[in-house]
Image (cartoon, rainbow, N blue to C red; front, top):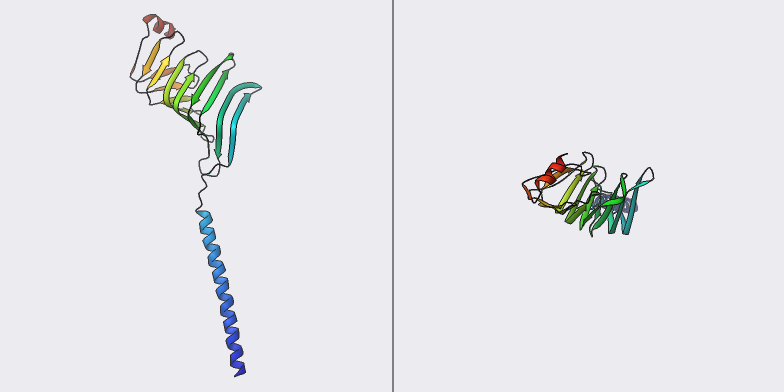
Length: 196
């Protein structure tokens, strides 16, 4: 009888240790599944009162300020976002003292794709003094093109105006642009001078 009772205690101990092993293994699997499904769309870097300067061979090409910039790096398509607005000055080596300007209430940059978007009361002033106003604009840096489907209001340096009711597309240096369904108060002389 003693021999039988020893076997039953060993069986119980063995079953108990197996049960603990399976419980721990199943818990570990659940933790793995939980970690795999965690949301990774949160900022990995946050810059408050951002002041960014970009240079090319010592020449300042861009200055940007924003109340807050957040960088999202842990997702498939990483991006940088300025949710509370951004103010950018861009400089041309030919006119270093007359920067162009872009302001918007929201901006997002996809660094790997070199694609930028700005939304909310977007205002652009070129180095030539032309002023553009629209609600959104997109810049494909790889193609050197900017475009929007929003109505674009343009005020030229001489005060004349132009409205592109169905948006525009342009080179990113604004050396040439096309407006869709446009109207304005250009004089014949101004158009002739622009075409030269």
